[in-house]
Image 1 (cartoon, rainbow, N blue to C red):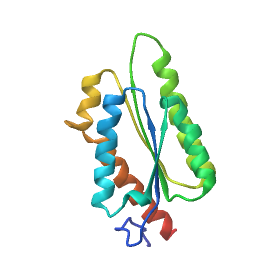
Image 2 (image 1 turned 180 degrees about the vertical axis):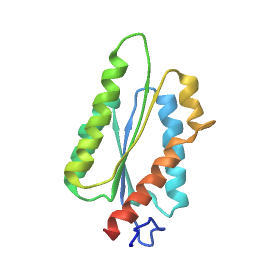
Image 3 (image 1 turned 90 degrees about the vertical axis):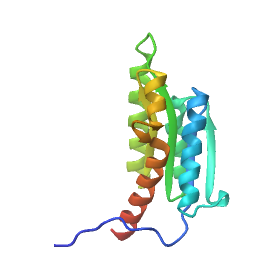
Length: 153
């Protein structure tokens, strides 16, 4: 039986980041952890393109445009949707999740969603180096592992 597993990448990768600017204080921490992990894995600033969009709802469209260029090995999507008093939260979460998945499957590129969907700011902070690790760093690891596996298939 053959098993394909992720292994450390030995060649440079090109990464695109789509970062929502809504809930900016959260996004800044998410972005910092993402960039830190990319640097640890050997990416330079020349290997990374960052696109800023107003909110999480705009992430899938920017990811689609990047995927159409076929210049990147993966797209990492950063955002924070924090529940408010209306049902808008549910709508945004569904649109972002579905949109990122559609881009990934249509363009055959890893689209890693590090869009925090939390009940409150405290839960978001727990995912930025707190009780639940750092989701920006996790997104980079997921991107690299997926690139590695896809290169072997």
